Length: 485
Image 1 (spheres, rainbow, N blue to C red):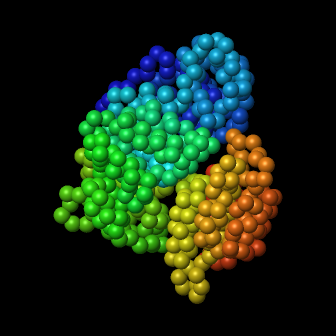
Image 2 (cartoon, helix red, strand yellow; image 1 turned 180 degrees about the vertical axis):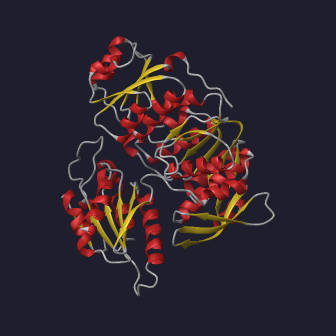
Image 3 (cartoon, rainbow, N blue to C red; image 1 turned 135 degrees about the horizontal axis):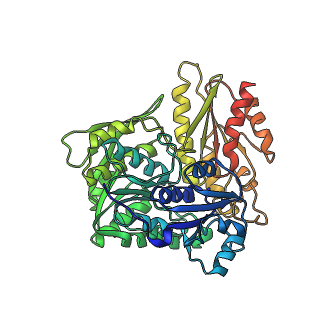
């Protein structure tokens, strides 16, 4: 068992925005390692209740008095710069008092010291892949510490202080914070321009993944998906630099990657959707024969995510057979094609997808589920998507791509943009997307009317999908409640 201690700076911390997905995970680990933790957030939440039960001193609302929640002055204040403005009163007071300010990524990097690390990076699929890795490693008796961007359904938590020598973490590129970490094994699922409001150009965004290669420890390995052009380019660059590359991908792309000189360690030979998810045939380097992969979540992208974690298990020296068995019980992640319920043959799901590529993958998976569920009804099930664009800048940049993705559905209800940390931009509305849709659709600015719109058109066999990174997630249960009524 690895004994982990906290440096003096992290023994008495105050966290601004402690209820956030990433921040609450760090708080859980600090508490588990014996740290004293206080924090504040703008509103109450399940995360605050849970942290309070574990001993954290939490407050709703930001106020300078919150810096006095601990028994002594905080040894540091932890923030996520992406979410906390410089005008925050607690942040300003901490600076006035000379209390060190640290970002979540800096603290997480400190918490990883002394561990072997498995980091999962990429534009899409980080949370699902990290979660599958956690389940896979737990399957053969490893008890890894972990920090992930969503709550695992198996454990109900987004972070854990484990007894093993491994730390598994999601490495976020949105503000280049992944460059804070060091990786024994790194998975890169894909590289596609995003977060241009931070990086400015597609070239600058892609460069952060090239820079991430410097974070791989000597003797470490880069596990990379060869189906994605961006990550395949990264793999070739890594190989030129002498980094050990372990490729994974579908059979067609694997053959081309091998011709390009990328060693293939995991191949998705075939797959098919099932009523409960998917069944696939995979081959891992070193095996005499193929293996069966069964997942209770749909979509080829999920099969590839699982394959990457199995390559990581093999690289770590774990039991692949036990990991495969564990994945058959993978319960998914909060807001990743999350099943909410069924009413009258209409199934309702919710997903966090907020980039065109993610939306395309999720809608493709929803189509597969609808087709499988509708067998015997005499007609194919339809996909009805309720989509809320996330950020004005992203909507402006990718309006055409969002429309192309939404056109994979049969009907689209598009809500107003969820601005999050951004102010409205002149001329940027959801109509940039809806005017390019070729399927039946409706622009619905009234949040409360979305369930009624769905109830008016949904039929048995249909899949209803609420989608986006904002509060559209609330619509899933509201739709179910109305359908029951």
